[in-house]
Amino acid sequence: MKLTPARFLSAIAALAALGASAIHAQPVREAKSLLLDLSAESLIDGETARGMLKEGIPAKVWKVYPEGKWTFLSQVEGGLTREGICVVTARVVLLPRTGTVRAVLWRPEKRATAFDAKAGATPEQCKALARDKLKEAIAGVVSSLVKT
View 1: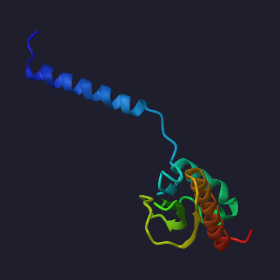
View 2: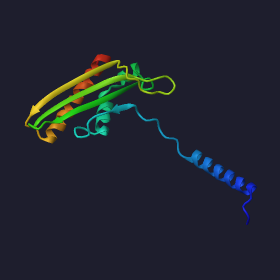
View 3: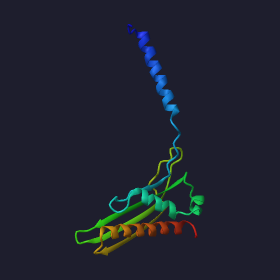
View 4: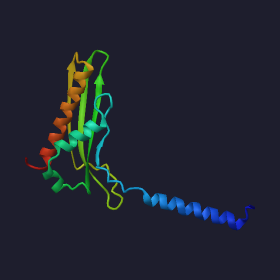
């Protein structure tokens, strides 16, 4: 069978139609929750931090600051120094989202920071301190937004 320009174009059209049907057959994905985390993985993983945010932010806050217009960002930084001192800073920030694209803007509406240091800490104790400070920062932002 000789490949003519007409057959070539027919084959391309058939492949394009196949590709289009495969794209439309994919399941619709759920919108991602916009609880963001920029923490040091050595102290707390992103999934744990977002879970703590989700757990720590009551429904009252989402009524006043709906997720379609606002997002929360957590950030835990620090670690163990050479001298064995665990230094941790945890920050939680409420950020607005843009209109149609829903991109997050760095224009903090509210923010809270908690920090601490513990001498002679093990890596596990440092991680526990990081979780405690993140809880404290979440509580600080929530208390500034709504009365609990």
